[in-house]
Image 1 (cartoon, rainbow, N blue to C red):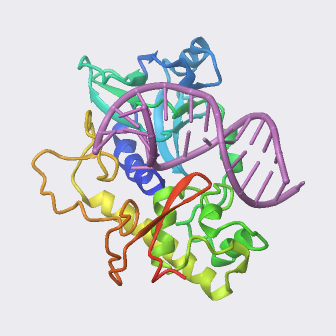
Image 2: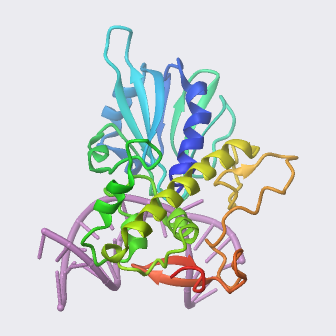
Length: 283
DNA sequence: CACCATGTTCCTTG
DNA sequence: CCAAGGAACATGGT
């Protein structure tokens, strides 16, 4: 799925475009995507409501809506799963093949499309309660990370994927942060020294912040229908130069030279998922 | 046909 | 209680 940086950039893009728009209609093409179950209740809750805000929490998008000026706002949680996207398109334009849920907003339509339908749109926000701290917030300290890693015999890479330890890190940025910190993904989390944890904490924040900055700079094709590439999840805008493509340093680069020491990047499998690292730099 | 894929949840086994 | 592994979800790319 899009991880914290991709969701953050998407939220910054969408928030001002949604603000003040009223939901005229909701079409649910894939009922399994919505929570709680029940297309009727879902539509009744949303049709007529107005978007008043959009923020990110971990990998979730949190839409805020209001039914009228004297009603209090409520939340709609969005999660993009592995292949989900959200974008606005002009009303009455053809929907993508895998449109799961569509919000008619008058002149524009908000599309949640997802080829694999692992994503969710939910009026139940309890999932947020299970999330750990936001890694880019000042409140997230190296001590928080240390506590999350302490006394665990799990590999540090796997601990970083635990959303209750830190929210928003996925398979790509776990590998990238460990490369930046020069730590082996296979190290037992609880055996890292305090200095190593601090270093990982700094690397994690730097890698995520740089990815957000990069995604905010690169010209993206937000509608992106049909694009599926490694370019920050959405495709490159038409006509944009292609010098943006180099970005990830180890993820997906098995066999290629390490950007630091030229040793071949290795791919291993941890808990059924690929991890990429430099066996020379990362100890 | 084989294997791979930016995620989460649930189940079983040790 | 914890950890590990696998399956499920579902579709497409190589």
